[in-house]
Amino acid sequence: MTIRLPGADGRLRAYEPRTDPLAVLPDGAPLVSRTVYSAAHVVADPYADVSPGDPAAVDWDATLAFRRHLWSHGLGVAEAMDTAQRGMGLDWAGASELVRRSAAEARATGGAIACGVGTDQLTGPASLAEVRAAYEEQLALVEESGARAILMASRALAATAAGPEDYLDVYGHLLRQAAEPVILHWLGPMFDPALEGYWGSGDLDAATEVFLEVIAAHPDKVDGVKVSLLDARREVGLRRRLPDGVRCYTGDDFNYPELIAGDEQGFSHALLGIFDPLGPAAARAVRVLDTGDVKGFRELLDPTVELSRHLFQHPTRFYKTGVVLLAWLAGHQEHFTMVGGLQSARSLPHLARAYELADGLGLFPDPGRAETRMRSLLAVYGVTS
Image (tube, rainbow, N blue to C red; front, side):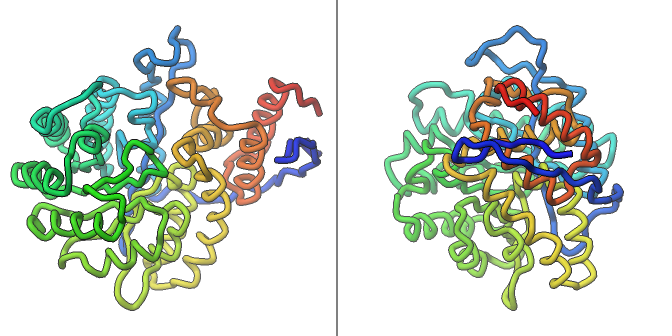
């Protein structure tokens, strides 16, 4: 049996789906050699009568079930991050409920969780004092939930800060009052154009110096840094300059195998959106790395990079559409609907290629179901087999 898939040239071509899935059994034991978080997506409620711009309608049962799936493989969950459509369909009211529910589920199941802290309750121009207060509100909620806090980059701070000194002031204030060490998140403008010039400069070398100054001033309050710049060389350079005890969590969805494998001077841990669809495969690879087998780790994870680079291609911020498509095809949810209507954010050829690459990797537990669902999506666009 073949399925006809549209290519970038607009032509249909035959593809023969595989029939054997990649068998990865759940193993809830924590991963040993690396700390690994999957930034998890939210599942929309497809029956809610909402329009783009309305508050998100979330299917809480399916959303929490997906987190249990990730925990069952030993992965941690990075909650309420950009993969969860934070600031792209999920507002602070929805994100705060997500944090509460997921943190409670983590406590009940023993899963590791870290949650995003931002300023997205601010919807217009804000002063630095208002930015600090918004961060404080979210930090308090995450700390009360019992989760580790991830200080996310702030659109409001990027719009308000006059220069590096304002970043040093705001982050210094937050780190001094944090009850536990946090993860600092540097999200590049390819993920969110509103973050251009973060840390007070469009020059990444200058921005890096400010970022390192924040960390150096409060190393006891920084568990680690998540770097999402899609630049492996820059991440390695930053990693080598971190104070002892401060981890580097790669957020590089283009170069993660080599960064996690590391070199003679160190390695990166992981906090990745691509580990949402790759959860079981990623866990399998890291368990091989736990034995010291770097070559085996690379042999398992390197083939996934083509899929990741496809999902995260420009405009990168719409990678979430491919992530949710794969969750539907894999059977983790019963529909291909996203909050904010973002299921329409990628073209049919893009989605077809995502299916083909994921199927080729054996990522679907039931390849037949994935094929049937892909055929139904194609039929909506007028493609008949």
